[in-house]
Image 1: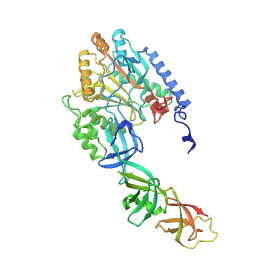
Image 2: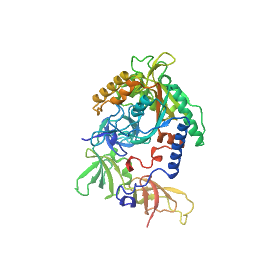
Image 3: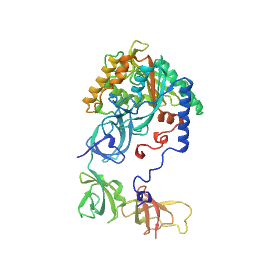
Image 4: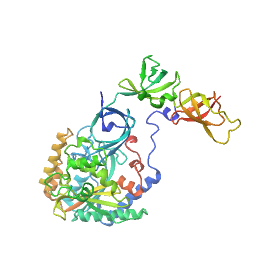
Length: 188
Length: 338
C-alpha cells in the first residue's frame, strides 16, 4: 500500500488513521519562520462519519486507504442486505445496514448509485442526487390549492416520508432531492 | 462536461491572482519603506540571489541549481553581514528569497524579504526601530496604530501551562514536552506523537495553537526571550530575572508572524559550533547537508560591528496592513501559476 507525505495532502485524499479509513476534508500548512513545520488537517472517519482535527509534523507519511468510489447498479434489498452490481464486470456486492445508512430510503431498483468501497467491501452508499418516486399514501389533496404554501407528509413505498404541497395526490410521481430529503416538483 | 473542464489545464490560470488595487498598494508600501530607510540613512544594497552556500537551519530548505553550484538564498543575511563587517554602516535590502516546500495560506516558496541592519543597536533598540517603521506605514495607510505589546517566551508559556512551566535556566529543554502533550490532551487538541522529545518542536506547536491566537488582534506584538536552543544567529544574554535567553524577537500582527530579529552574534567560533550542530541534526534527519558559509564565518572572524538586524516578509506585512487572509492576494502569481 502506498504512503502519502504531508506535502501530498489535499482535500479528498483517503488515508488510514488509527486503523480506520479517513478522508481529508481540509489541510493547512503551518510553519514558524525559524521552526518546525506542521500540517493541520480535518479528517472524516469514513466508517463513523465523524470529523476530527489531526495535526502532523511535516515530512511524516501516512498509509493510503484502499478506498474507491465506484458507480454500481442497485438490484434489490431485503431490509438487512442491499445488493449492488458493477455494470461492467457484473460482479455483485452486498451492503449491510451500517454501509447503507439512510440511502435505503432512496433506492429504486436499477438505479445507479455511488458505492464507496473499502478493501473491496461497501463502506457507504450515495444514492443519485434526485429520484422520482410514486406516493403510496397521503391525505387527500386540496384541489386548486397551489398557493398557500402549506405541506403535508407523504409516504413512499421505500418508507421515506417527504413533505409535499397540499395539492399533491396519492399515486402521483414526485421528484425528490435525496441530499436534503425535500420535495422538488411533480413529475407529469 | 462543464465548460470550465473543457479548457486544457494551464490555460485557465494565466491571469494574476492579486487585484490591481492590491498591486498598487504593495507598490506604495515598497516606496514608503524605501522612503523611511532613506530618511534614516539606511543604505539600500543588493547582494547575490544565488549563493555558493546554504543555511544550516534544520527547518529551512534551499533550492539548488541544476548544476549544483548554487543555492537560491533563503534570506540575504549572510552576504549583508559580510558588507557590515567590511563597511560598518546601516544597510537594508528588499530581496526575493526562496524556501523549498513552504506553501499555504501564509506561505509561498518565493517571497520578498525586507531585511535591515542597524550598527550600534541591540535587539531592544531594534524593536523600537521596527515599531517606528510599522507605525509610519500603518498611519500612511490610514490604519489605527496602537503601541506594540511585548511578551517573553517564559511568560507566554507559563500563562498557558502554569507558573514555572518554562525552564528557569538554559541547562535543560525550555519546555517539558510531557507537560505540553498533556495540555493538548486536556484541551482536546491533536498532538503529533512524532514530536517525541523535540522540545523546540513542542514549543513551536504550543505557540501556534495556544499563544498566537490569544495575541491582541489589532496590534503588533514582539515575542522575545527565546530559548537558547533557538538562538540561531542571535547572541545569548540574560533576561531581567537572570535567565539565559537568546537576544532574538519575533514580530507578529495579531497571530500572523511577520519577521524575526537578532542582536547579531559576532563570535565566529560560537557561530561555527551552532552551524555544525545544525548540520549534524540535518544529517541525522536525512536532509541535504550543504557546505558551511565559510565567507560569513571569515567575516565574523574579521569583526562584525555590534549590530542588530531584522527580516520581515513583505507579503505578510502587506497582508497584515491590508487585512487580507491569503498571501495569494498580494502576489501577482502564486507558485501554482509561476
